[in-house]
Length: 208
Ligand SMILES: [Zn+2]
Image 1: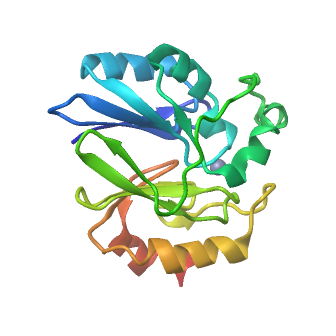
Image 2: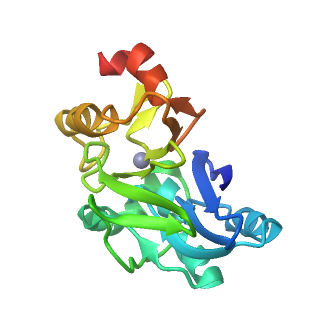
C-alpha cells in the first residue's frame, strides 16, 4: 500500500493519499487544502485518483475537494447526513478566517455497508455520527488501518459543540463501532499523530 499523510491547510487536517503499487489506482481522503502539494505527491507516485472521500463536511476536510475533482476527474463521496453542513461552508470559512471554497458538489453518498477501494486496497465505510451527523471512518481491514476523521484522536475525541455534533452519538459510535476493531489497528486521525485502537482503548481518558 502506498500511503502518504499530508497535513493540509491552517488547521493541518491529515489528508491521506492511498494507492495500489500494482495498478497505481488511488483515493484521496480529506483534501481540505493545499491541492498543489497533493497533486505533486500523486504525480510522484504515478497514481490515478479514482475517488475523493470526505470523512465529514467541515471546511478543513472538504475545502479543496472541487479543485482536486477538476484536476483528476474523480468523484467526491460524502455521507448524505452532512449535506446540510456543506451549505454552511461560507459560514465555516468565516469562523476560521479562511476564504470560502465556493460550492462543493457531492457525486455520491456513502454509508455503512458500502466499500471504497484504491485498486486492491478496500475499505469498509463505517458511519460514526457524533462529531457531525454524517461523519464516517474508513476501515482497511486487510491493511489493519482506520482513517478516523475527527471521531477519534490520539488521546482525545472529536468535539461535539459545533452544529450537528452530539456527545451521546459520538460515545455510541466510539464504543459500538470504533472500539469493536482489533487492538492492532493503526488509527490515522483527522488531525495530529497516528495511534492504534489498543493504545486508545488503554489510555484515552475520553473512552473510560
Ligand atoms: Zn471536523
